[in-house]
Amino acid sequence: MGDNIIYHTIAEQIIDSILNKEFKTKLPTEAQLMELYGVSRNTIRRAIDVVFQRGLLKRVQGSGYFINDISREGKLVVNLSMGAGNPIRVKDSKLESKILSFDLITADKQLSKESKIPLGTKLYKIVRLRYLQGDLYCLETAYYVKSVVPYIPKEVGQRSIFNFVKETYDINVTNSENYMSVTSLDRQQAKHLNKSIGSQELTLTQYNYCKNNVLFNYSYSMYVYPNINFYFNSTRSTES
Image 1 (tube, rainbow, N blue to C red):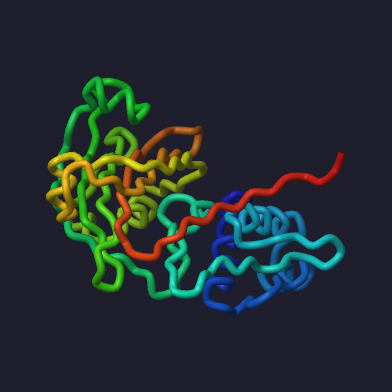
Image 2 (cartoon, rainbow, N blue to C red):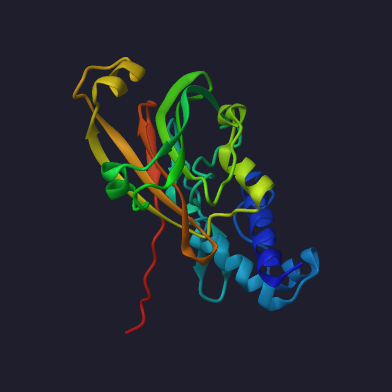
């Protein structure tokens, strides 16, 4: 197994341990993690860096890494630092989906401009309503580049498409761009969400890249879930 795969795998295991409250307030020491996972100090440090970049840790000089509590009482927190496919950090937050349309299309001039995908590119376009614990969560419109993701069965749209892409094509998100905005619903969107045309909704637009900085997915999601919060972690050096 390559070094990149090893430390990313360990990072995901550490994240799972944090989410499952196995690590409650602080990470074990580097030496303890080295023993736990049977890898070198350099591999552990790279894995910790991945977890840190996802906003789940804060470093206290001389004391180690402490776990960020991003929960807010009575509210759902979406952690944008986690990247695509892992936005909700609540253990029972599995989403259910209702597919509204599932098509193979060609990127026209307008879509090409907004999605950064070349004109004429073949794309899977999947529009679906997503539900969290029975309540409407968002209206999601997602595009997958067919040359990178050759085939998506329609039934996959009812569950996690990212999990399918990872398991079937070994495609992982290496970096993503996230934009929050308030957008007005067009006629079709308003119909899907049972709202008025022109109603303004909080929208997350994502551009997701795999290895070699290849864009494979573009999406925008309009959130209507009550009491939703968005979290993003950022740090800066205090050194002069």
